Length: 287
Image 1 (tube, rainbow, N blue to C red):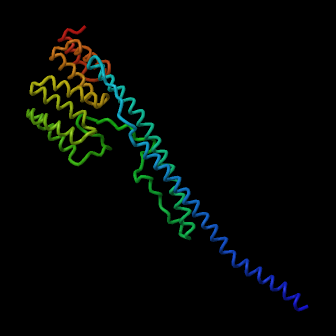
Image 2: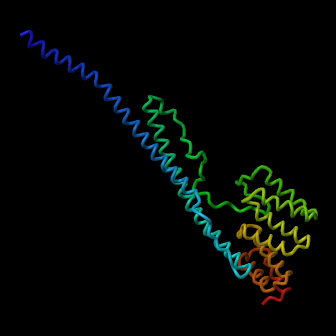
Image 3: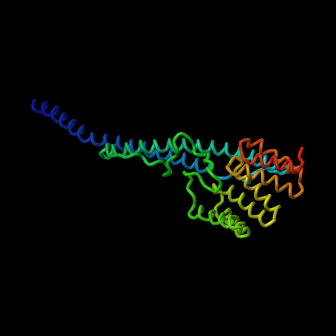
């Protein structure tokens, strides 16, 4: 009788001991599974970032056709190519923004879960750092830079390199003083030192003025063409197109000059350069 009562009691005690012993094991396994899920999500995020990096890699030599029978044809070809590249840039920028937003949200969720697992204070979590460390502008991709308000000045929200505005102003001062050779050399040095600068179009335009001052009409025409091509919708574009047409006229390329000068009014009807272009057309006896 005592043996019968002892067996159930021992079995009950053993069951309780086994239940107590296995409880932390179950919790530990559950915690390990949660951390494994986090590691898996981090791996997925890493793959997405690597895929984004591949988007930034070139696929071969660029195929750009900028040929044409006239200066205006080449300008039109350059403008069309710029529009195509701008559209591609906007698409890629939108894709990058989506990856950044999705990655940032995932990182924020992982931070929350890790703090919760470690028993930390969730209320002390700050705002998650944007993936890549740079905040994207609200309401857009940031692919379209603002145009300068005046020739030779960058937009207020454009960050210039150290000494960029200073070097430009020094070259412009040399031009204003009539030191055309020095100004031309300084503007060349500027475009080489700051490729892709928002002041490139203005620098090329003023270089053309300096070369005109030196009597080098052919190189001046090339500078005006470079100024227009750098920013066909910028502040210097109407004046650069007019100066290009006038330079072609001085070089004896009357038909090319007339077509180019007519484009000033067609592209920029509200510009003050239109009157100068029409006067030049009258001088060249354009049809």
